[in-house]
Length: 505
Image (cartoon, rainbow, N blue to C red; front, side, top):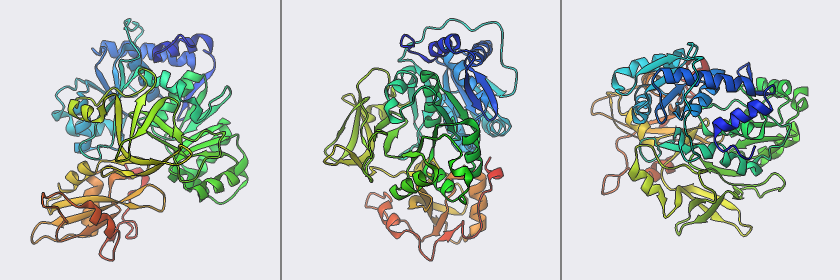
């Protein structure tokens, strides 16, 4: 397998050597390596018939379903750049990403296509909108395409914490050579079976998919996470590796103890962030080692981690990955440089200035602050600039504030993170109303529910007379963070203003 260096070659070789083995089961639909190769070839030919060529952007607005997986490999086969879009985006959030990527084709499910239709008139580059269950496949055969490890295979949008979201250009080598070299994180071995309900429009689920390809393993992908269903699925699939976020681990711990707690083959659960005491409780109860001492970004993959054969040190995020040179700038910012070609992102799509700012003298500037302990382990300190992470999703504070100000009664808004009991952040919005206006929690909640992705809806809202600002009129968010939650703050959760699962799209 060492000869194959790009994803289409890897899949074709697996189809020859391991064709009858199960590769992917996604939301109940299985594909062997040979079946996935056949579907990729036929879908690639279908995309070619639509006029898609190497370098064109094909966006998907799909949850975890087998068509999503097949399209990933179909795009890779002809050099089309896959742009996986968060299925919960709508309105301006969705329009921005599709327009910025200049997607010529969008493939979506019913809800995704409905969201696209609302903004289609603003997408000048969009030529085809296709239902995921439409018969795109063709027997005509895709063209031969020259692909190198440095060519862009996917654009995944980051949170845009200090501005609008940025599209990370991820090369083919990131998905193959990079996956192979970072194997010490979860120590994949023959016979491992992977399971996750993380979405394929995020980097980690994709990383698991390509790890399965590189190492010849089986992966099971579910469309949604449910604590009780997860224990059942771990047993059914005989999974040995589970990946999720810290909130998923907490939800599993909240289940009543039962015989299902140990009725599985799990050896390791990757979940971040996760408190040390919760890690110990999880391992004691479910019998699986927790891997949570890890730090990474979409741009890089895993920057640091604690190998599974080490006990690790609570409060740290591990030692630098052998894949990278890692150092700290004078102000403590984490800087990263790849030791091997084509395993790091190649820049931000359509944003040359941001790329130059992020990559200086060959070093990627993460924007995160850390310190190094005596054992060479990194200790995360803080984000250099404002950032929010809620329910496994990164949220752009700039974009969220712009959407909130779209309410006709709101003059200004600033959002900050509030620590959540479920790990990660809850969001607090500090809102200044226009003169003479008044509002209610119910009115604002209905506006947020209509205009925002569910994960970006603030839990807390506080109406304030003004926002604290510097002499240059920049909002002093540290003062808002220090205020936390007060008696004057509306707590939507406590008021029963929540978005049910079936209302998220």
